[in-house]
Length: 424
Ligand code: GDP
Image (tube, rainbow, N blue to C red; front, side, top):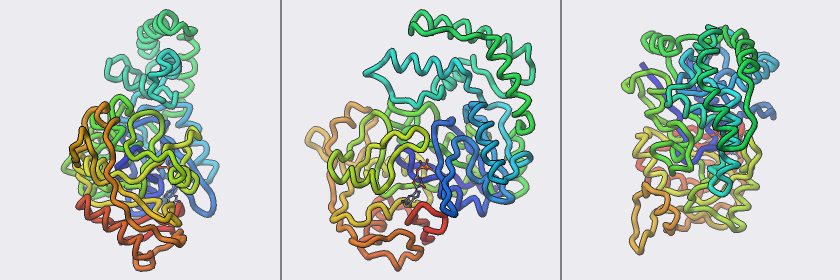
């Protein structure tokens, strides 16, 4: 029952989209297990670029089926738009895309509450993408959420919505001073969605477990990265779900024993979107260079990403909690033409050097990174497909990473395109 999990090892945007796209060539099913439409996966081929937010990128592989699992929160508008785009590109979606009937829906009031709360918090804002994902997870755990299955019965939907919206409207008006929303308009809109989404909805847990029994290969993909995990990340500057390996089991309903490969996606440097501590952040010309060369602007929001050197302390921590069995190192080409490359191998906290990633952000905010300086390579390595064709300093950099983390490197990405890849 082989399940391969692809996990972002940093703060997201590691280039998971490309790796999932590549590996899905050998998969029967690609399944997304958490998050919402805030994460954008970018896939490039034939000089074209596609951004997918919810549908797994395996949809572009012939013979591959895709699952949006129960752990994902679904914005019906976003998912339908994506299905339409994929269809227009000439790919069949019906019969290939399976959406969990247990997945929670993002409702218009979730977006409204999120926006109002961020405005209200102002300086203390988390820097969310305003897509209602956090509030949808809040309702899920408060047991007041609306699930895909609720769309089937208009009366149940109305009852649940009335209860939920009474509370939401009171909060919107009385706490945040925002306008209230109309229940009936939302019911009409969502009943319409039901008709459109119906062909894709199924019991995806039963489907996945049956497929695993039949010996099918499932590729599970997380969104965002491990340092944004609600339990293990830099709380409260985190996402509302579990991008780490455990999220794969609870977000799909598959047994942990079915997982045989856990691939950590490591971007050759660090980036972070939004607020929160970032020990290796560079606010100098190196940071600017990484942002420019790496095109570090959000796939969904266009926000410039904060950039910095690779942080091996953070990576050792995410390797520990995920149990990576192999690494895929991406965007190595972005480091071309730097005179030096720094790698963080320790933190100094209160005068003591440690390799432990602190569990509270107040400590993380005041750590001083300890760097090891490695030589750069003065040539463009974009598109190299054989390890031996890389400059020796680039190979040394890769070895340094996998030795430090004690995890083998299996795949190196030397450019955004499928073929710009080194298999080790
Ligand atoms: P994801 O959310 O982890 O899939 O990351 P994103 O898709 O937001 O960011 C990855 C970006 O880097 C996309 O624009 C990719 O096309 C691009 N990319 C992926 N791998 C490489 C690589 O090896 N080199 C370069 N230069 N770009 C890459």
